[in-house]
Image (cartoon, rainbow, N blue to C red; front, side, top):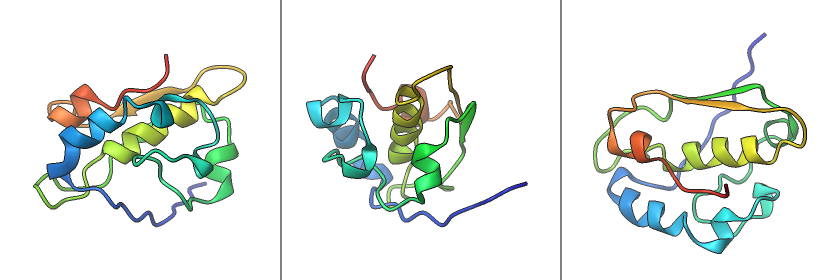
Length: 112
């Protein structure tokens, strides 16, 4: 069974450096419900199931495109990491595709 949801990304690839720096701030590193996060990287408005499911694996392979005006994957990587860290029991593996790109390779910092 597969479910998919349309996601609107507010970020752009050319903002990657500043967004990754912002990701180091306290509002982005606190583990908690990302639906109410003040972090610029948090994706808001996703279905409750996305936030509440205890995922075993999250794969980041979107959005597509890698040019200055493309959305980039900063928010998708951040959200995958936060959802994994918010898991109360067990572990969540996060797989990021295209790790030859700077954003995917460096990722977005979060709580340890």
